Structures are given as structure tokens and as C-alpha cells.
Length: 263
Ligand code: CAA
Image 1 (cartoon, helix red, strand yellow):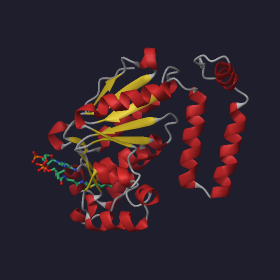
Image 2 (tube, protein in one colour):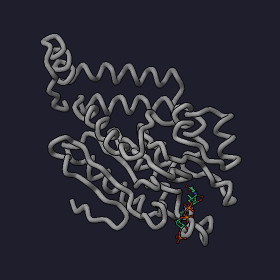
Image 3 (tube, protein in one colour):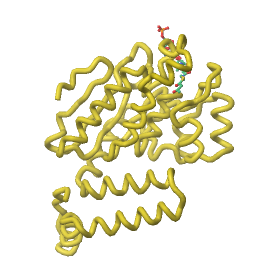
């Protein structure tokens, strides 16, 4: 795979040894605004990583000033509804959402609009204490279009999601933590390091169990409780068909670290 992209950097040094790949949004001049090309590069990378048996966990990050300050306003300005419909963004978002392994978002600085939606589409968010979150689309005369009224509401509740999406006001990492949007707030200079530690913890677990847990948790957003519980139970049963379940339990009883094989 050629990791040479225009708008992202892909660090795959730890792919073979640890199963971890870091994708860095790299349009610093426009605070990592997410144009279609950037989204496409992320998705193509994820799809390539999905085909690579070594992949366990992906980290998605930006720079100290911005994770991403939203969709690219310059690209959107002249857009007509028909352009939006024909644009491949919808399919790119869908493909992003289908990536089956954990994605840890390491967020510093601005995490707004489409950038916030991208972070919310990851499995967990680690935030630097300088992070600023928000859905400021209302300030531009548009609405959020990739989860900023849906995942946001399901995560922090109607009253707060309405407040932030209707006022466009930003909120801090600490507030995001209190609302359950991010899982950890850390000093800005340590965000990526912290995300790596968390990714390492995940990467040594059974890869199939990681996938099945991700699938079951996402189902909590998409299905009724009954259906979600059914899927959860089936995934639980499925783990008993895998060597990794025997290995995990055997290792516990033998007081040693498990060596998972991914089947
Ligand atoms: N798209 C395109 N360019 C952007 C951008 C964006 N979302 N955000 C920032 N930039 C550009 C600015 O135009 C500026 O470029 P120039 O240097 O060429 O002027 C550069 O990045 C630096 O930005 P600022 O000078 O504005 O930096 P600041 O520190 O003063 O302010 C900010 C930072 C508060 C984040 C401000 O840039 C801002 O409000 N950005 C827009 C945020 C926004 O509205 N996001 C939502 C976009 S819509 C969306 O996301 C919809 C969707 O997904 C469906």
C-alpha cells in the first residue's frame, strides 16, 4: 500500500509489531477542514487496513491547534443540492462507519462541525485540555449533516445537544467529559501518547472480540433494546466458537498473559 496522501499522514511503523496505525489529518493551513478528498483518503486507508491481518486499532488525530474545524467551507460555498447529492461524501461516511475495528480519536484544539462528527464516529475520544467542541453549522445558515444532530443527541441528550446545535456555542474538553462525549481529558501535549497507551491496551486483546464488542455497542445506537440484546447475546455465543475464548480463559486460570490469534 502506498501511504503517500495529499491531506493525511499515515504512520504504520507499529502495524506489524503492535497492530496500531496512526492517521493524522494534515491540512494545517485550514485547521484540517474536511474536504471530500481528505475524507476519501481516510476511508481508503481504513479499507486497506481492514484487509491487513495485522491491524488491531487505528488512532485518528490532528495537530495541537485543530483535530478538524469542520467540513471545508470554501468547498461547500458554491455547492447546489444536486452537487451535495452526487458528492461521494455520504458513501464515504457510510464506509467510515463500517470499519470494524476500534478507532481512537486523539483530539486537540478545534473539533467542530464535520470534525466533531468525525470524532463522534470514532469509538472513543481522548481530548487534550485545550480542545473546543461544537456544531457551529447554525452560524453558517446550514444544519449538521453527518451525525451532529443524531449521534450528538444520543450521546449527550436532547436538551444539551439542542442547546449547542441551535446556538453554535463551543464547549470545552472538561464539559465534553462531563457530558459523556469524551472518555478522558489529558494535558494537550500528552494526548497522542495517551491515545497510544489506550490503543495498546486494546491491541493485545482478542481481535475478534474487539470487533464483536464494537458491533454490539454501535447496535445500541441503531436498534431497539430487544434487538440489541439479541445481537449482543449472539456475539457472546460466537466468541465460544473461537480459540481466543479458550486461550483467554486458560491463561486466566494459569495466571499468564493470553496470546490471542484472532480466531
Ligand atoms: N473550512 C475551510 N476553511 C477553514 C475552516 C473550515 N471549516 N475553518 C477554518 N478555516 C480556515 C480559515 O478560513 C483560515 O484560512 P485563511 O488563513 O486563509 O484565512 C484558517 O483556516 C485559519 O482559521 P481562522 O483564521 O479563522 O482561525 P481562528 O483561530 O481565528 O478561528 C475557528 C478558529 C473559530 C475554528 C474559525 O476558523 C472557525 O470558526 N472555523 C469554521 C468552523 C465551522 O463553522 N465549522 C463547521 C463547518 S460546516 C460543517 O462542518 C458541515 C458538515 O459537516 C455537514
